[in-house]
Image 1 (tube, rainbow, N blue to C red):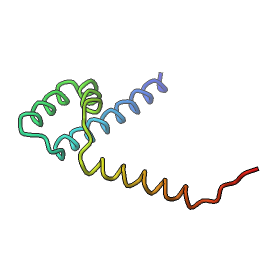
Image 2 (image 1 turned 60 degrees about the horizontal axis):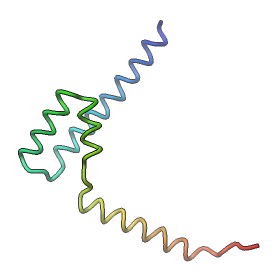
Image 3 (image 1 turned 45 degrees about the vertical axis):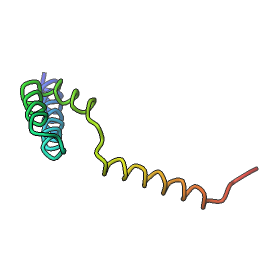
Image 4 (image 1 turned 180 degrees about the horizontal axis):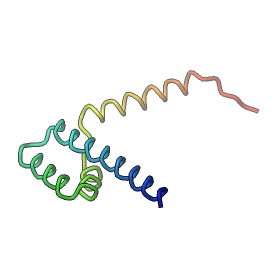
Amino acid sequence: MHNMTFVWAILGFLLLIVWVVTIVDILRSHLDGKHTAAWLLIVVLLPFVGAIGYWVMRKPSGDEVRQAALAEQAQREEARRRPVSGV
């Protein structure tokens, strides 16, 4: 019985972390006031479903797209510099 309580406590804690991160992301995003208020309302009223819905429907910001492109470019440069190990 105590093991199940521990599992539920861990799951609750993880849900709380996802919920807080989602709310912070909504507040930091560059959505207009109506969309920010709507997402906050959805996430507060339906914490798990709202958070999942937000992350599924969220579009990456311009900075995130640029960072991903730079990371990919750096990875390609690194691959080009590595010697080819052939047999």
